[in-house]
Length: 98
Image (cartoon, rainbow, N blue to C red; front, side, top):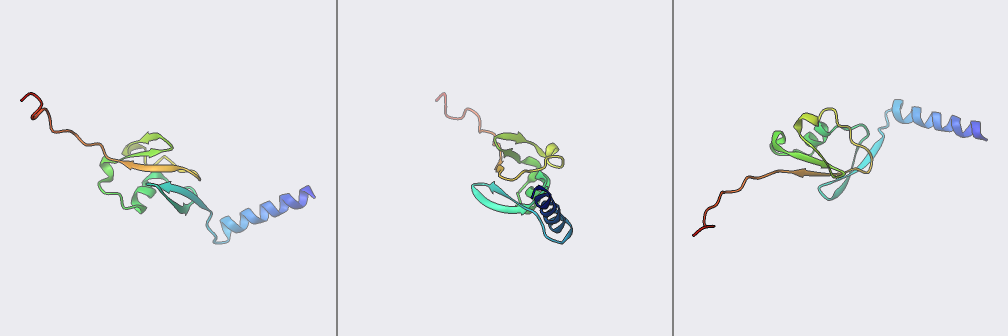
């Protein structure tokens, strides 16, 4: 019985990878669960999600922060929670000491 199970697993993997079927993973992106192809990098996600000014965005993946320099080598995994963060500078001390 064990051999039969192993053969089925091998067959299924070959069908998924070589048979034109794509393996999908689920990510929660900005609070919405979506499906993407397995092996997606952070750079590809930023492009697919049409993130504005990607050179200035910081991405939170499961509460870990990644800058633009990390996008190409960061591969996302099934179930990851992703948020796009933009940091804004403040306007100074206008009105504080009046």
